[in-house]
Image (cartoon, rainbow, N blue to C red; front, top):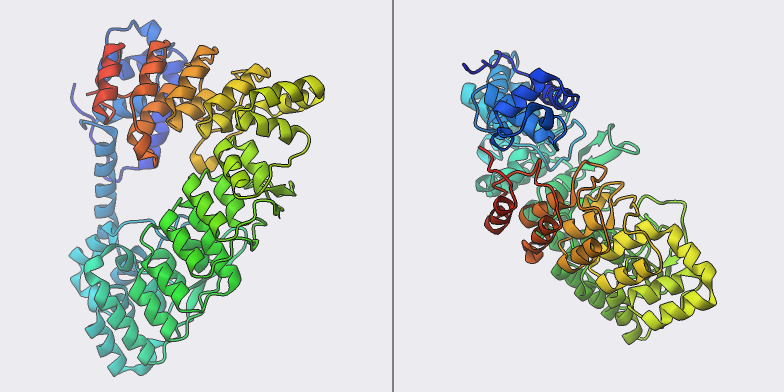
Length: 553
């Protein structure tokens, strides 16, 4: 069959919609949709058409069929060609190349992260219109072309401070929010020289722009935020600070920790210009990145672990909530963190709940190791009510659990009301013994969890989904032994097997990657329908093939 031709101006969004519609029609048993998916998916070729509509067909199968119908080997290659055509069409349709280049080469303003986006469109415009790069002070600043910036200033000194271009910014703002600053390291020195020229010509180091689309309210986006928080450019950050930039805005302290390269962060701290709130914000945000070296350095340079942040919590609370390593918890304690202090927001997104200590939070996360550390450090575990029972489970204190359950049965009832959350979070912190005790208290193995967006844990996940994704085989095996349904779908339509495979190829916890959970799930009868093979992990692929999975062309 001849491949379908792409239109001159293909819409990727339209093809995504077509794939969703195809999947929906296939699941409804539409013969044409079933045939389209079947003939392009080798793993489905031996199934009867009537069986395909009942199989676990995924969106990836429909996308793959559409890509193959257009003559492409895969959906990624199909979408890449669409993006290439759209870029070519975009360039061909440009009426103002200079404005188009400035917009394409500046940080995204469509609501996506300022630290996202590529140079593809900007480079395509430059290739078609090479004169754009030297057309005015804004484009030369965006490219870090110091010599050209100096020429424009020499012709007109006001060009260093005049706002213009399609975004209405001055040249230094364009420079600090240039995608080239973040992505083209070879231009790095040029950006510093160009910024120096602009500052020498009276550009303000505190320049910037107002992001009206920022949620929950408009936000001032300072030049130093662009340099330190978006591009993480240490030398440009240093220059701006030396010329008077104030880093204590709402964006710079929040975003500068978002990397393991702490050079720009260190420049900020060592400048002495950060106020206590900003320094505390940076410390807390570093726990989002599980960055032990960064956290240790901040503590050594004056960050106060007991100062509350604008989110109503301290760094230790956040470290517990984000499942930081015991090493990070320990270094916080070594620098004076007090786990008995209360936070007004114990869980991200739960603004109405108040008054939890890091001790209580550790118990609820199943962090028996953290509770033991607190006690060794001189902080007794003195919890009340149901949290006393939860802590006994977290610490694998079977005798304590039995004693509390027998003497205060109402606490068991209270625990069961939170069973889905506790079971999932214990499983997600690798506390198999605690999971066992929760099950013995009567928490159903099928109990559902509300999810945790930070870890990409979907709503309506079971503890098995969480254990599979967090890559902890002992918990996976225990939950299977206790009857956890291996083919249940989470709120995003993913099975535990799909999550266990993803944990092997696309997770932050690389040191825990192992095929052991995959093997346990397959042995227990997990379906391979909708699971791609090859997966990117050779040992997982061997297991999938052994248990009936099919390779995908």
